[in-house]
Length: 221
Image (cartoon, rainbow, N blue to C red; front, top):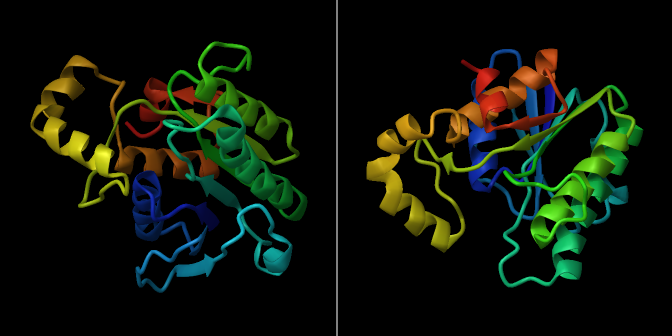
């Protein structure tokens, strides 16, 4: 399996990259981002691409993939809706429209979020934008597309968020995580579980197009 991974430097992307490199079914992983991960692995090739709205200069490197794991995302805190839409919807669709044209047999997996609004009409800005993005992705002519809606995510294997506030929060709740996972069974996922679930979806598909936390975990238990 040939995998394309967006945002391998983010917390979720780091976890997905780890699972891809460990999986014997994955022959190669190509990452795309504004910065390199700095990792070295025989299966890994990195494309540093500053303009995530335009893939014309690197289209010749974007063919022959079986799956794309799209982990790029930002917080909506402090952003007006037009700017959040430009990044969340604009960057995602620029990549997905290019990839659906070049790789029609690709499985595309998008990391969305708990509470995403499929109606696109709710009160919460980020949820509307995520819903708009999900809906647009599901209309593209991929072999299959899946939207993952995780809630709280526990980083494992030394993985850390690039966002300082998130790092502090994860440090504070780390001692409580076993209790939280017991109390909210099925609602808290790890970076490992998300990576493994993506690989399952790429290999054999899933039971539905939009997967909440309990659905994601069910793929890997």
